[in-house]
Length: 406
Image (cartoon, rainbow, N blue to C red; front, side, top):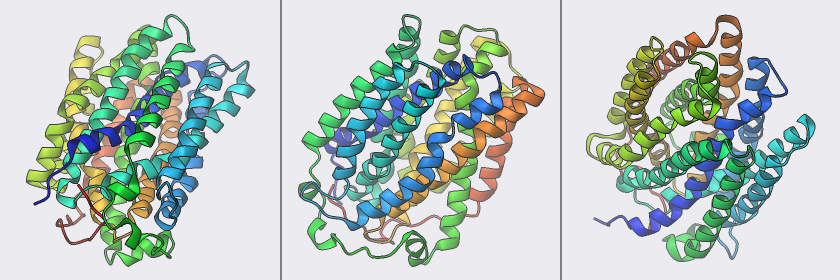
């Protein structure tokens, strides 16, 4: 059996590190910045989804395009070379908005740039990894993402008290460093076995790619599960800072730091979650995580003590690791040869729909009933996810052939 090259996967993880720190800073502090201009939680929730309307169309199309093209830099790298430098620039500009209009313009441009490279950088993981190693490889990549989130929530919270610009400067600087690492150390034509023979063979569209798997119903149930658990989780992520400020009476920096406890727990349990997925199967591991979060969110709905809330958030991070580490490899396992980018796009299509639906929906609930019902809402979403994931049949490693090297 071929072994996993942890060094190569660690370097690839800088791509997700950059994505994670950017979205963590964005989700932690952008609602508060928007609340300086806008007082409706529903409208803030809608604005927070603008980037996902872009991602809804761009990321699947980019994923498909990156399957089809071949350049001297590779199939995925051209998109990374465009998107990451632009995202760095617009993060800096976003920190220096002058009014609501410029804030929204830079917000849209930054998220447009993120949509250009996100699917290709994530698709590199299954490109470089055998099916049986993908949960472990994804755990390393998400470990890097967890480090990014911890830096964003902890360091970002400290920097916020000094200047509202500093968390965004931090994200921009680390985005630039991550691009340098990826461009320098990841060489597709060297690292992806069968690269030349597979280049340019994919001629079908996204829907044809889904049907070509011969497993469309199974894929649809999995995508519905992914969509519903992200509806629950991303709603909480978008409003947790305002939840802490308005319901628990915390300072903005203290409330934002509370999400560090999920991120730190996720970081600690990322690799064990990958091992569990490899040993017990991705589906069983995901089901355990979904059931655990249902219970955790139900408990959080009843708590008002900050220490108790943070303790349960630590447990929640463990269960989220079981889900998030194994879900994308589960999708990638279903992809026919040469269509990893398409299926990566489908994965982000599901999560983008969730990100569009959840903040406005939860914002409307908050406007109507208050922040006390936030975790009850999220728990119901995970119950729906459990129903869908139970209908999915697990794909055995080796049933779908992919370009592999590590």
